[in-house]
Length: 314
Image (cartoon, rainbow, N blue to C red):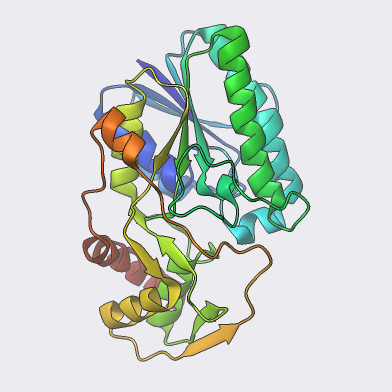
């Protein structure tokens, strides 16, 4: 099997490269490196079944030979990144999705789109089920990401219905683990980096907003299972163990042994107040649910960030 992974040098993409190599696939990693990093895949480049192509999938990509699976994970995915690259985010969600789907059509490949819980916006339904249409501000500062993913889902379903492409869609809820960037801007690397440096933890609003954190190995397992199923509607992949941001901050302090205080700041525009996946569809369809509890996952991730912070100090 030849599997092409766009965004393969990113946080989640690099873990997917590892997993599909372990499954015996030939893996082609495509990334333009605006948010990905070669260091995430450096350990794979000696594998003769792995290839890296530096390319922006917003531009057409021609490939020789067969492609059996395409996993479209290319996109800035944190607020820091998509606010810095709003046009690129919109282009990779629209033009990039179009190009990846076109390649899947030509190669008769199975195709999986990495969508996001952000398609639900600031939800009025809790927990979020796949049949909820969302509450998204299309002209807000987060619209470049939210709407690019909503468009990508619509384009994916259109290629399935009109061209018969064998598509799948996952909606990823907050995922964490090794290879997240310290300057990612998301809550977990923010808290861990600040705690390890002895800086105040930045809490937006009063910290009562909730998130549900899924360890990256669990997410990758769900993706590996879904690619083997013939199912075309969206599937939530995330951990339904919901926690407030303030509770989460205290967990990070306890785990790291930090005595950092809190720095309260205004809640950003359109920041979701609630986030919890309903994973009933994934349980029924895939026999999948998260196995790594938050404490274990945070311990594994802390060890990674301790090394990153130590490297920064040198």
